[in-house]
Figure: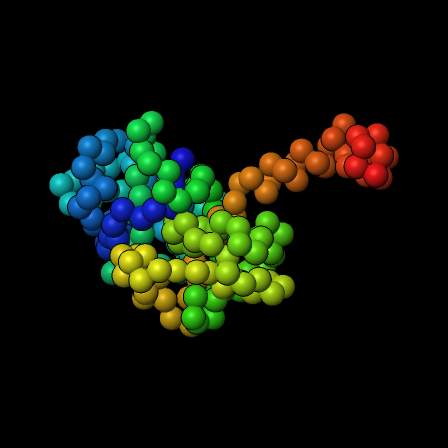
Length: 197
């Protein structure tokens, strides 16, 4: 689990077959094989380490759902290590499980194929960065971003048409699942029986 507060940016050294290698510094501190690091918000397991890099094996599903498929050597990526029990929760609950990619339209505005779990003033993760939805119009949303976040993430390097990884807030998915079960169905009868009508 992650918070969406990026610790540093790294440099993509290579994508060879299913192996991605990233050069970085801070996230390597205390990292060992098997640890989780979010790359552009996508949770990956460390399978190799050097003093300056880590590598991970990327699944076909990850390539399909993320912007990894369009990344190239030299790209800047956002990095965050997994939470520890004593870590401050500065952002929101981020699993590192990407829902989709979005197209960058400029001015921190993005277009998604489906806005199902995106909520105005709700939390969203863009390339692993915990942000607040400032505007939502159909499948196009904009996020609020402070200068510090822009300066310390790869969002400042986005160009029109770039793909970014999107993870919607997990709470919405659980609420939908809970409400969609027959036992928990909310309808007019439920509201009457529980004194809401």
